[in-house]
Length: 457
Image (cartoon, rainbow, N blue to C red; front, side, top):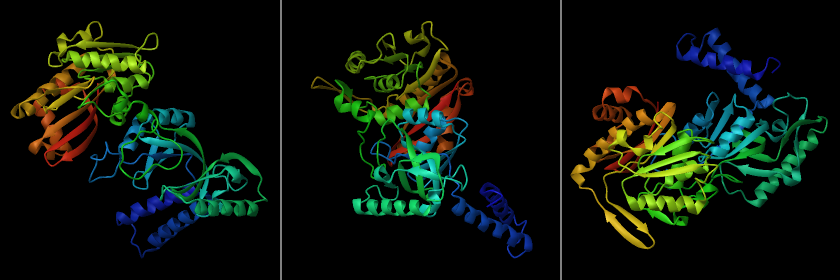
């Protein structure tokens, strides 16, 4: 403990790697020493309460993100945080429901949390440990002071169970009061805590809530895949809009796409298949200053304009929105690029899927359809045109975020298969100018899936 728990952890990791590489036999003197060092590391962690500075509680799968990563861990929230916090080391725990943020400035992490749709809340850790008394000792200053806690207002959150009974919470608060009495000899330190987190990396963690996500709030994220209406998701719910299409992107996914595209204050954003403007609305809510939309449907263009007017978004001088009646299949001739080539920071797009759609406005319904045999051809043509548009419109470092729909046998492709499909659909000069950063599959049925792709100019 005098040497510091970090030294023990490094030695423990070295010992594990050495044993796995058969450089030290388990029964040898070196193997025994390294294993003993690992035991000391675990003991030092429990005694010293070594704690990370920040802990993010992540949103679980919802009704609209349920199909992502069905066979893998739910890692989309961590992927989003990684885009918002470049350079920070993120360590997901508890099956990706908690994320430890290391080497992250608290103010920067707060801004990232406020822009994240899949981060529920952010906490600054004051102390943690295997028992309440150890957790109340300040983790950053060593065993010389204790965490400042007001027992009367302390909130208890159990990450294993979203719904903690009042009696169980009261029992834990009583235990905190007894632990504080046992530490009366230690003076109060600078770190304060308003929340006791159970099973957030360590068994007991005292922390202070410093941030809330776009759809976050108090308490623990729910564990069931339900439709969410918290925060901005209630404000931008489809049922609240004056104009909506059957293919309009749900706000949770729309905010996620804008976040992955790096949309923030002052950003210039283009949607080449804007429809009712759902993706551009969320980009405007994140602070985008210039919003440009394209679509071939005059009714969709008019409906998108009514949605922007309803939310009072895209209004000068804070932002401007321009909607063009244009075809994505002719990107070079698009009026959206007049005097604006190479100036956009992001393109967010949900292209046509080659499936029947229904448009509703003012109670009337209009149906459009595409011949099933033409669906794959249409997706290939639109994808090729979208990549060409990205090369023309994006500034260096700009991002293209879009969904690639796949039907039939294509729905079973893995990441390598999707990459091969893109290579078959698009010429080399298009792919060479765009680098693939993220690819995540969302499965709806055995014959239909779509890939969320993030590419950078």
